[in-house]
Image (cartoon, rainbow, N blue to C red):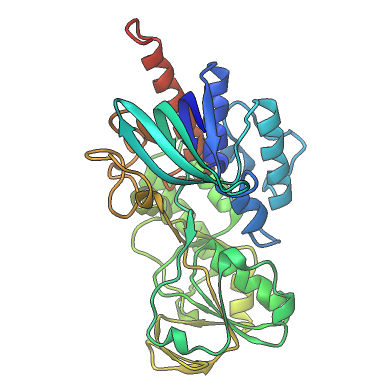
Length: 383
């Protein structure tokens, strides 16, 4: 089977949906291919129950559709899924699900995308003038190599497989990773009665939801370093000196780090209080695992029943994207160019959702890509 379209979009997460919606508004034909059996599968199938958007809703809306005025400032997971369903219906986005892309190559000036239909088993070909990679940064869960991890006798899982802490009650659980997911999963485990520990390897800023919202709002009016200094001061006023609990603050400010490296501040939703109360232990990096014993870099050793890796994701785009010489992606599957120049490559290839800028970055990418494709198609020589 072969289908032709102006644009093929790979991935039906928020980035793919937003790009398709923007193209639909320009009356540009597009096909969205999704390997899972539903759109936004990361949110539906691989997100823990208590998750909500950590940024205020005004920084998380997709193009051309704000959240309803009566929605809460910080949108819960289920409400965000409903928002995405409404978005798909409103803009006529129709993802083709269960299509796992095998390859995408440039042939005679056209992009040929080969996908395997997970329902029928058939191989399908899609031909387009433009290719949008919208598989994003979070394509596949990443568990770092650890000496002796194979010998661990308990349960090992990535955060994408964690739902809630109910079945971990009274068990010793180690959470590896101190980003927002790791810190919130540690809180959830503690609330369910697990004896919880968390690995905080690197320095990290700890801020409240409202402080982050204040900082993001002020960035439209004040210099970056002034906003950073203000939110760090207010964060210290709220949380105090956390170094005695094993949490060090980076030298650079939180918003500078976000723009420079993509790493977000931890938005505390109650974990810090549990750490201060001794209900969650903090450990430095792991040195080795031997059976159920985990040895840390400071020499401490402790036995655990389960390890949850909240260690992020990796891009898999380089496993299937061919003919990207001098184009968008580096060997790590991330854009070679830093934002704001990351979204467009050569020969009609684009990427959406790789700016490490959350849903706001996705919205910018989708609008930029649709506008650029529309401008190219509007040129007199374009057939």
